[in-house]
Image 1 (cartoon, rainbow, N blue to C red):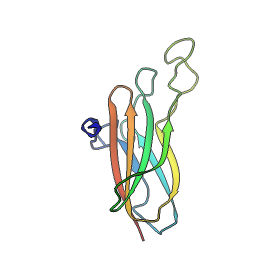
Image 2 (cartoon, rainbow, N blue to C red):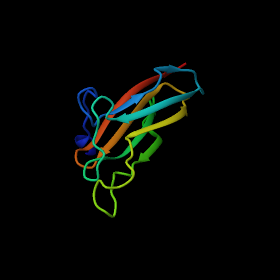
Image 3 (cartoon, helix red, strand yellow):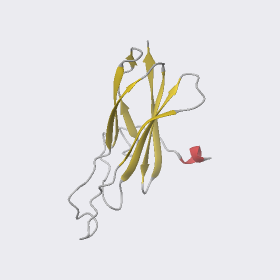
Image 4 (cartoon, rainbow, N blue to C red):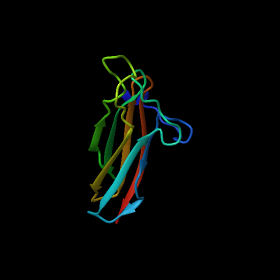
Length: 129
């Protein structure tokens, strides 16, 4: 199963873990600002040879059997250029921000893919009143 290859750790000591930032509780239908960052405490490289390729954010309402993909962001600018690796004029930062209206209490799951170190995940419960 793919779950065997998904890694997690404390984001304060591991640069690959996607960190989910949002309120812990909100009212039903209220827009919740959610930010997911890879490299919050320890910066992750963003080079042609070592970078975060994408971050995805899913929501699983309490008791549900399936997830709902809220957003997915692919990071394309890693300094590649015709002149060679890491000579390009643009580098993306491994952060995404979205607003979502949640109707039920549930768990946010963030996954991020490093082109060298694979798939990483984290989660955060959001209570909806």
